[in-house]
Amino acid sequence: MRFIPEFDSAFSACPLVAILRGVTPDEVEDIGEALVEAGFRLIEVPLNSPEPLDSIARLSEKLRGRAMVGAGTVLSVEQVAQVADAGGQIVVSPNTNAGVIEATATAGLASLPGFATPSEAFAAIDAGATALKLFPAEASSPLALKAARAVLPKELAVLPVGGIEVDSMEPWVKAGASGFGLGSSLYKPGRTPAEVGERAREFVEAWRELSAAQSQ
Image (cartoon, rainbow, N blue to C red; front, side):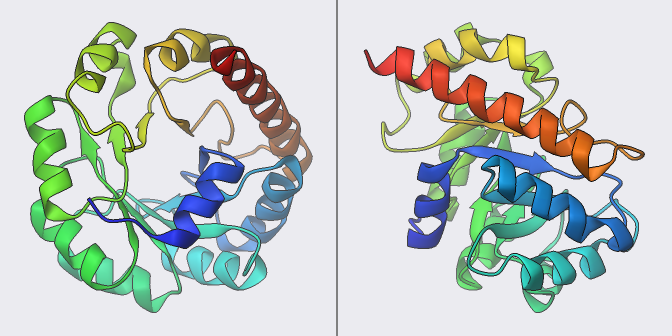
């Protein structure tokens, strides 16, 4: 497991990752601004979006010092290098690929690989993951997360990703979710920056209420 101070700081400020699948370079900066204004500090542009490296480069420059920007759906070592060259700071994958995780750590970027089982989780930790993405959350459950939490390092951040809505966060938080990755419930092609910003504020408010209740 690898700690990155900048990621830890952004995650502590708001442990919600905005997944902008399908975003285009000409809209990404305005959407990024709306997300930051709502409180988000972690933004992901999946590599199966239109011209994703251009979007990452623009967003990284626009939000420098205010948010960490990276790529999602990173499946190869070559793509890790491309993300780094574009100015990305985070590499998110749907799977547990030790080569990708190790390349990410070597490049000094934050690695958030996907896992579905404890075996995959520990393999990711051994390879140098910064945090873990429980994916797809729709195929898992809060009970499964709670069981995994019993054996995973307590300081390790675990984020359920897939189908998360404002009203479905609570059981995951009670089971030990450290935060969430938010996709189409937050952004999908066609939504305006204002619409994304409004949804982002709803998620941030819900997270703050749930985490405050959990700490009591």
